Every structure is written in structure tokens, then in C-alpha cells.
Amino acid sequence: MSVWDSNPLESQLIVALVEAGILTKFQIKKLAKKRKEGECLLDTFLGTGTITEEDIAEGLADHYHLPYMRLTNLSIESELFNYVEEDLARRHLCVPLRIERKQLTLAMHNPLDFKPIHKIESEKGLSVKAVISSRSDILRVVEEQYGLPATLDKSMKGDCKSDELPEGPQSPEHPNRPRPTGPDELGETTIPDGRVRVLIIEDEAMVRKLIHRFLRRLKINTEVDFAENGLEGLTKVKERAPHLILLDLHMPTMDGFQFLQRLREDLTTASIPVVVMTSQSPQQSQQVGMDLGADAYLSKPIKPQEFETNLRSILSRIYGL
Image (tube, rainbow, N blue to C red):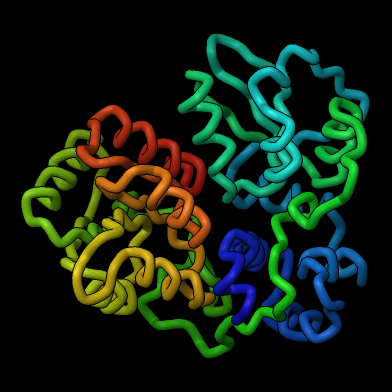
């Protein structure tokens, strides 16, 4: 099993670094061979001096049109940590900076890690504004607030959980894959014509129509396509990659879990945002979907306000819409 299978969040971050021009596919392939057993691939890059933590933070901030903030000598009110639990701060490398009008500014290491944002918004009733900071800056603030942990686990090392080397495909991209500039890019974070391509993968016709209706209410210029199962969805993605996928988890032929795993295994599609939808309880499906690399989770029956909040958040954070 490769890191693309076992840890899609790290693979998405690496894809973003390539998109931002901070790393190249050649560097990834070369340095992966030097990776020590159990070492996070990003730590390999840092340890060899290929990139610095500031390079990563500044590059991701610029790439995703988010503010970059140094946390050195920054005074943070201790009360703000009531909104970010210690486990959340350590595992997802995020710290609160300020709150104003029920909006929490959150410093994050990985802009593709949506779990802390969803947790704070759902449990604390706040909206979250993300800014990017370096991993060392965030770790320093976490240790100042909570002290050193009893044992340093890998969750503090940039979401690395696999001992395997990445084996992401190195073949040329599909010619219809969205890209911002040249042929070596792995994805896009702008939509030149302003038309958002959305793929809805759902086996129930009535639900597909309902979701389409919700999309029209957003008053965003969209081009919508449909698939009735994961296998058909993969075919649609290969034909023309969407900017966003809305995915049911429980379908015949190929379910959403299998689809999501296949999507994240492929370096050319690993960074496509995915919102999963299911009527199963969160305990049964949500964690599994998130572990496979979903960016957001919607419970059925889908509520219009929750649908709008999640989609606007993703489109704004990734595409600047």
C-alpha cells in the first residue's frame, strides 16, 4: 500500500505544493528514495534542505489566496483556546488567533485539512477564517499553551501515518485535466471562465434533481454533470475533470468509498474537492469518508443552509469564488 492509499491528506498537500511550484514531480520521486522508515515525506524534504517550512507556508498561502501570518511574538488570549481543544490543535496543527463578530481566525498548517474548520463551525457555532502559518510557528504556540506532550506521535509531524513510500503515477496527465498554466501542473486553483464544473454522483434520481436545484440557488455559474455510481463517476472524471464532486457513499456497482479511494490514488485527480453525502450515521460513515480524503460531509436529508455553507466555503477557499 502506498502513501497515496493510506494518507490522502498528505498526498493532497504534496499535490498542492507541486501546483504552487514549490516542489516538482521529479523532486518528489527522487527524494522519496531517501526517505527513512516511518518518516513523513515532507520531513524528508525539509531535512534535505529542499524546502523550508516558511517556503511551504508562504507558497500555500499564495496558491490558495489566503493570508500568511508569522506567529512570532504574537500575543494570543488564552480564552480563545476554549474554541480549539488540545487534541484538535495537536493533531491538525491549528491555533486560534482572534475572534470578532462570531468569526474565529484560525492559523493552519494545511489549508486542505477541513476537519478542524468543520468541527469548530458545527460544535462552537462560529464561522472560521483560515490563515496559513508555518508548522514550527504553530507547534511553538501549541507547546506554549499546552506544554510538551508526553510522547511525540506522528500526528504532530504533518499528518503522516504511513511507513510506505509514495508510488503516485508519473504518467502524463489526461489532456482534459484542468490546469492553470503549463503541462506539468497537476490541477488548478482558478477558474478562468468563472464556470464551475460540478459532478454529482448519486444513484437516486430525485436526490440528483434536489442537489441540482440547491446548486442553482447558489447563483454561481455552474456546469453540472451526473453519474449514477462510482464507476460511471470515474469515467466522467477521466473525460473531463470537475472542479467539485458531490458524492453519495452508498451506491451499487461501485460505492462512494471505493470511488474516493481510486480518486485519491491518482496524482492527477487527488486534489479535486469532494463533498460526501449519506443517510448513514456519522459514526458509520463520516469518519471513514474523511479518512479517505473527503473535504466535507453532508447528512441526508440535506439541509439547504448546510449545503450552501459547505459549498461556498470550499469554493471560496480553493478557487477564490
